[in-house]
Length: 269
Image (tube, rainbow, N blue to C red; front, side, top):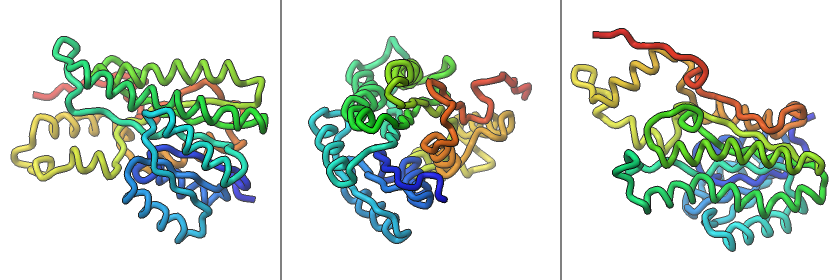
């Protein structure tokens, strides 16, 4: 029997990247999926791809930083499928303007917190009552390696660190309702957005790589398992959504190739 047979999953950021890859794997495992994203055009492409697999999919354009938009999307999904069993809070991301604290623009701080911490709160607020009715559910939040160790991008690190504490609190508050909450902390993942941002022509110039390119090459040599594809994280999502992970709640899985677990030092020239 498929691992997610009969389950309904609500995924934010569902038009692309990790969330879309997870939705594809979910439908392969027997789930129905509601994909939420602000990009209507990308949602349409994702819908076509999932329907081509024979999946039962509902696409919902919404701004997950706005409560009424989230509430409407959740109610539409519940009305269509009759239940919500899995919540994947994958929408979010860092901003290039995320600067050192003394140089931080307050609007960049606010926007980063809204994208990465407010939106999972809003989705949980409106999805959890549906899970409580069924006395079961799996919440999958997204932290980051950056939230586990002190690094660059303070706004993003603060938000993703907050996700880990928020996840622990969800696990404690809703265990008696049969609801589990876990988080995933990815390292570097090749998605449409990250490839567009980082893997430009400058990265490919072996004779004159940029400082950022040099840094990424060093990290890859020290932590060879630290870079993956969306399917690698999607596979973890399937596990957390399934009953196979029934003993896991309140934890963050560090899918970062060991970067947050141990230190290796580059002794180059």
